[in-house]
Image (cartoon, rainbow, N blue to C red; front, side, top):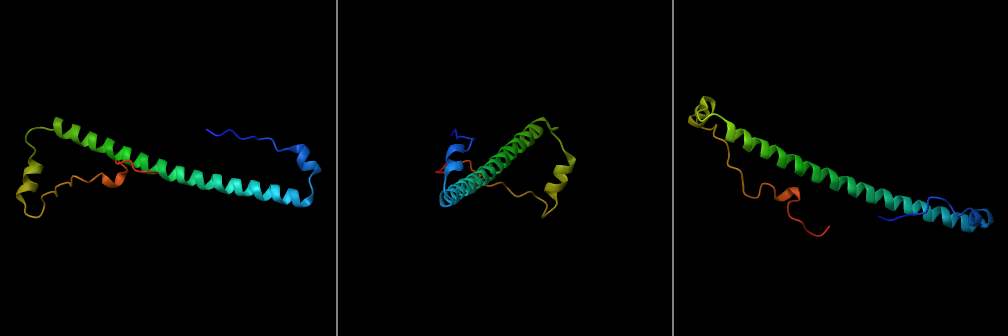
Amino acid sequence: MNTHKTQPPWEFLFSASSFSLQSYELSRLNHAANLRKDIGRLLDQWMEESACALLARWLIEQRERSVHAPAFAPEKSAAAQTPGLAPDPASDNFLADCGMSRGPS
């Protein structure tokens, strides 16, 4: 983690020329804008990672429910016998877009 001084350089600020103060102001505004961009990227990454984790948790729970489900489920067999109601099979690369592969950030 980067440590940064939180106290402004008071002696410099009180003795600086107008041009130096403007330059200092612009440098602080630039630094603040860069921090805001970094925070935005981190928030986006955090939301994506959290969503993928929630999806994985949901899949885990669905698998646990199917293991503990009764051997005969009439509603499932009726859906399987009705044409057009059979569920689509899941693709092997279903989670590929959820950041499961770690590439360069």
